Image (spheres, helix red, strand yellow):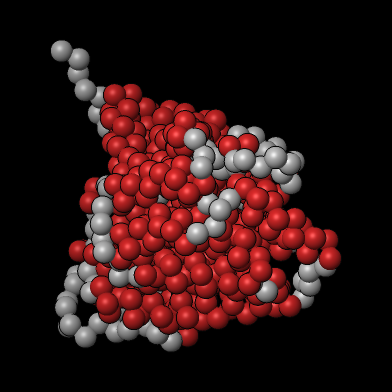
Length: 485
């Protein structure tokens, strides 16, 4: 019988080596050389694997950890694929083209960014899903922006900001419920406490979007593009309110808390049915759309579609999300190895040792969320792991638990869509058709909330004291083993 190797706790150098290596590899490979992200993350995973092996972990243990991480992402992956199916169905029945057609007539180009933010924010607030908001109203807003000549990266950033506004504040959102669970606070107290940072961040975002719109007038070229788009869309599709049913089903299903996957798949198939009945498209093309996405050649349009029409409508289908899935699986290889070997916990423990004040505690929590988010690309882990680590530290400093849950959302939930190799970042890029690094500067809410959290920590504004008189000893801070998620 083969003797099991003794395992050792990683030193600071060993724990930091894979994480720093990944930042360097991605910074140079992706940021400078524009190499594909997946191989770069796998190289970082190999480095992490070598360190883990030197600590006594076998390949079998690392493989099991990777499989466990990938298994934990499968619910999100299934939703990701169903969104691709849904987008294809909504293109096929004409729902998204109809919104684009009327949107370019109604929306003032100068307020396109503000409208994109508010539309995505409202939908995500009532449904609790940032992904669903981006995949429905977000796709439509991108089409309208293209017709009006408004910057697509800026529009995508406004959509992402709005989508994650609701993801933070909606009681229907999974992360909004997860943060108070991890921190030990109460849901609605948590939501009210987030207003201290979210409302100022929202006002900043709306001010910037308004300023950008007013100072970016649209000329005759963009107007001609919009007119051409309207003409071609009206020739390709028959517009009827009934074709909006798939989108209505998704919204109602989110509010009523219907199971996400069957709701989206059903709405996608309904889109195909309406495309055949209302638009007169073929059933064979409809089933092709579900897998490979919509193509304007499937319509009865006899002319030459404009480049804008092709770029905006040729999308959707399950296969459109496969590159995103591959990226997430590669990220889970790295996350599984550094988690099972204790490297991530060692880094987080270093942060705890430097806490000396309220400001230090909140900034350390932010840094921990950054570390987990950047190394795992997982919004749930960026909430759960720091939540477990700091759960006892806040009452020890006389702070209410809702300070922790708010900080987890301010620096965990909203950071993930700004990371190209995360599931949320890859999804937003694939759905909106804009690279993460291109829309990142315009996703203002996603980083101004973090700035507001730091300001609150420094000034004491919006910092709630613990009134439970719960005495917690310094020895009750969580151990590294308790942080494995």
